[in-house]
Image 1 (cartoon, rainbow, N blue to C red):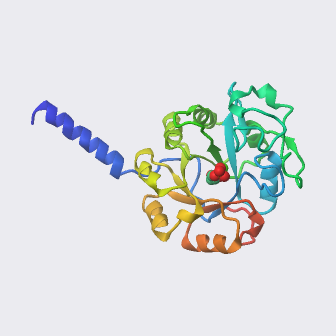
Image 2: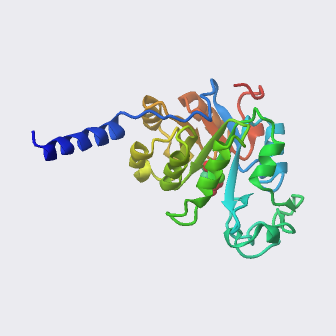
Image 3: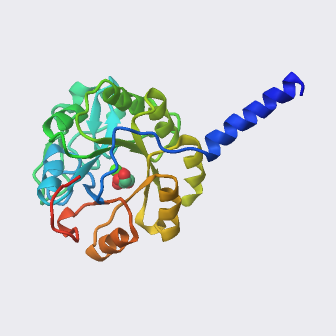
Length: 271
Ligand code: G3P
Ligand code: CA
C-alpha cells in the first residue's frame, strides 16, 4: 500500500476508534451507588437562587448535592448566577460578563421575589469553600456565544489545581464548553445538557461523563443509550413527586429539583 493510502487508513482507524469505541474518562465525579438529588440553583423557593443560602437550604431540605450556575466577570471572577443580566434578579444593572467584580460587590440578588430575603452575589470560590467537602457539586457553565469558552476553562483550571474539594461535575448546554473542559484536563467529569435531542450526536465527539436532558426528553431508550456507554443520566428540572418517582424507577442517576423536600425517599446523603 502506498504511503498515502496507509495514512488515510490510519486516520480512518483513529477517527473510527474515537467515534465508536469511547468510554467516559472523568475522575472528579464518582459513580454514586444511589441516584442523587441536586438542588437546582440551590433551592430557589427558600432563598435567592444561586446563593450560598440557597445551596444550604437545598441541603437542609434533603438534597444530596447542588447545581451551581456560573458566569465570569470581565476581570475573570467566577460568579454564581443563572442570568447574564443583573436586572432579572438583582438591584444592579448591566451584565455580569461586562462588569468588574468590584462593581458587583454592592449588588443584592433575590430582590424581585417578595417572599425572599435579598442577599449578595457569591463567587464560586466562596461557595465551594463554604460547602462541605462530601457534597457533590454540578457546576453549570453559562456561555453567551458558541465560542465563549473562557469561563469553562477557568473552572477547569480551578479543578485541575485541586481547588475544588467536592466531587465535581462540570456541565454546559454548549458542547464546545464541555470539550474545552476536557482539553484542560481529561480527568474532569463533564455533563452535556440537552434541551433537544438533535444535539445528541455531539456526545460521540465530546465524550461527556453525563447527559443532563430536560425531563420531557427522557425515555427508557435514552437511559439505555447513556448507560450502554457508561454515561450517567441526570434529569432537570423535576418538581413533582410522581415525576421524581417515575424517573428514579426508570433508573436515572440523578435529578435536579427546586424542591428537594419532595424526594420520594426520606434518607439523607449517602454515596
Ligand atoms: O443544569 C440543568 C439545568 O439547570 C439547565 O437549565 O436554565 O435552569 O440553567 P437552567
Ligand atoms: Ca442551571
